[in-house]
Image (cartoon, rainbow, N blue to C red):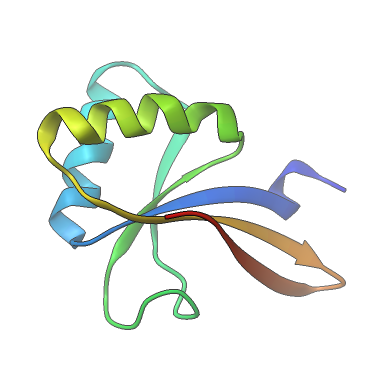
Length: 92
């Protein structure tokens, strides 16, 4: 199973907080994060999430989000199984 078949996404309460948190991570030189559209299965409406491949990166993300007062709505594991996307909430 390739790396692209399994990743985590961190969902924020607002689009602006996701963008702001991502820009701070980028500014600090973290290359392990990617700004993506939140999958419709998780949240309706247009929103962004931060995607990362390894759960270990969550500590960095949580620390930076906390410093700017960004509220994390949830962390999800996304896996591709037999061509279908499975999304599971791993942290609130």
